[in-house]
Length: 305
Image (cartoon, rainbow, N blue to C red):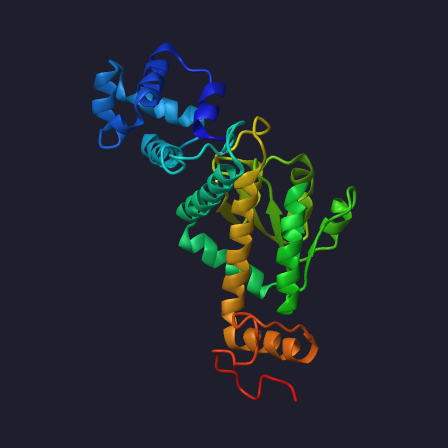
C-alpha cells in the first residue's frame, strides 16, 4: 500500500488535515523545511506533525518525511512518454504499437533498476547461493516467468522449483526447512494464498525473498529481503500486465546472473561441457555457430574427460 493510500484510510483531526492537505498539494515544499517551518505555514503546533506521522505508522516526522519524499519522487519520475496501462491507442498502426511496447519495456527496465538497492540485491544473492533448495510461490502469469528462472537455476545445479498445483502450496510450504530459500512474487504483496503460507514458512525456518510493488505490504513486511517491482499499473483497468511481467522477468534475470557470477568459471565450464556433449544443433550464421572457442578461460580440471 502506498503512503498516499494509507493516508486516505486514517482519521485525522482538523489541524492534522491541514498538514496532510499541505504535503499532498506539493510534496516538494517539505523537502528542505523543518518541522517548525511547516507548522508555521499551516498555523499548527509542531507536535501536530509528529502525531500525523505516528498515525500513519512512523516513529516520528523525519521518518515519515523521508519515506514520503522517496515514494513521491519515484511516482513522479520515469514513464513520461508511455502510459503503463494504455500504452497504445485503438487506431495506432501495427508498427506504432510495436514501437510503443518497445518503449514501455525499456522504460520498465530503467524504472525497476532505479528501485534496486545494492544491499538488498547482495542479500538476495547470498540467500539463493547458500540455499540447498529454492522454491517459488506465485500465481497466474507470474508462474510462467518463474518456470524459466527455475530452469536456468537448475542448469547450474541449484535445485529450484515453482509451486504449480493449486491447493498444494500449503504442503509445499511444509516441505521447506532452514536450508530452503523461498521466492514470493506478488505485485500487490497481498495475495491471499501467499499470505496464508507466510507463517508456515517462518515456522519452518525458511528464508524469504519478496518481489512486490513499492509501498507497505504483507509480503515485504514478512520477508528477509525485498526487491521492488516497477509500480505503474492499475489492478485491472489496463490492456495487459506489461510492466509487471517485464519487471519480474528482469529481476529474476538479475538474480540468476548474480548467483551465476558467484562461481562464474565453474558454471560457464559446466554449461559449455554439457553443450559440447549433447547439443547437436547447427547453424550457418556466424553469430550462432560454435566453431570458435568461447572467450573464457576454462581449466581442464573443471571440464570432465
